[in-house]
Image (cartoon, rainbow, N blue to C red; front, side):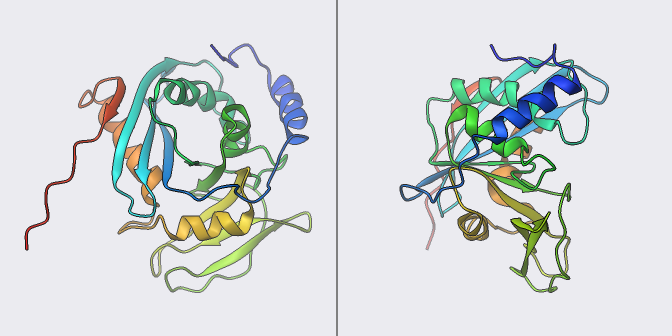
Length: 236
């Protein structure tokens, strides 16, 4: 079972630089029919983490299934090294899932990272799955002033290179920050995320993952792989 608990920050930086050499942002090879979202929940100052992956139909954004696990980590939370705390637990949830999506969305950065190794890049490489980062806050790079209307977007640049996009998911709310992680282009990442927007600021894959892991953390859901109940029939 993968763990980074024995890693120092120096070790983690070295691994990021090694993995950076294997980043592959080639166009998607097949159409997307299902999409996954991943998130972690934990109690403050606890070593216990609750990890979840949800799988949705794309672009309908209806929940198909979800995988929940509880794990332990002692790797500290430190900016730029989120993957070392969260990816081992997320990989356990991934391996437990009886269903694998065509693409994953992770709550964090892709290549909008000082070493291009955000959590979506890290997870995408280890799981060998197209992956996109959808972060709630900026970590690295700059972008021009963004329009206030829904779907306004501006490219994010770092060191003169296009890394991702700031995207306003609702009118007059704070944007989210989209970047490719692995096996998908930046332009495709932006288009895909636009199709994942529902009623909320946070796109549905990571919003629903966040919802499930929080319900799991407080005891409303049990660990394991779960098939979502079918939606009730529409009444006319």
